Image 1 (cartoon, one colour):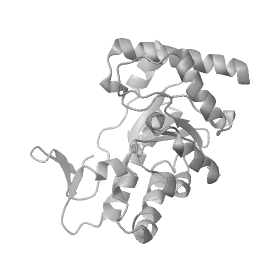
Image 2 (cartoon, helix red, strand yellow):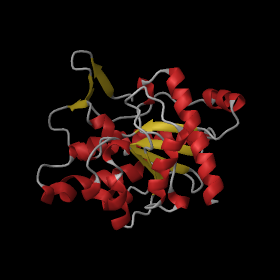
Image 3 (cartoon, helix red, strand yellow):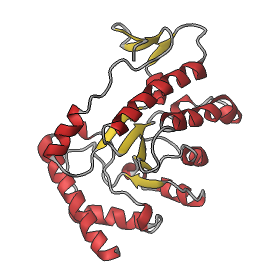
Image 4 (cartoon, one colour):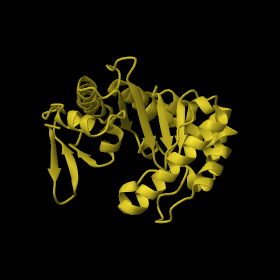
Length: 249
């Protein structure tokens, strides 16, 4: 971001003007990953809503104005990923709810009415066959489900394992169209979930989500775990998914 300055005391960025992308993807990392692993690869762009939780804008700088400027810069990143062969791109929006106004009557007019279109702006230039993913961390989403659906992502992953999958009822009640990946196990513990445990969680999800719309993933935050426990957990997750596919497909 050419126009974002880093403040070492506040450890947050200061907005001084328009944002732009100064470093471009040259494709070398994509080509290296493709040589090492022939499976589809996912690119990640950390979306502007999350950036805005970490910035101190210049006084008088309109919130929605800098939001759009940031979106256009991140849109360039997304298009660069696509140009270099990445057809699955995750645009994180973990902090969507954190900017909601205190008054519920202001949620749409003062925030969601521009925040949701801003997200769509980020991936608006992608080809139809590029799959857009997004992710949201633990929060209370049930009262903004229609707005989340309007983000027009192909897939959204929620942290859900510690909330007893309550969000799934709300998705169903609101006829949620987006494909969804609720976290099947809690990563905030070094404990490795068994194959049966993961299958049990997925079985509960399949009672509320069509199998064609369900993605299998852990809650977010694997970087906090050690390599050995992470690999063991993911191996069990993959095995559980394979066994259930044989049962349901």
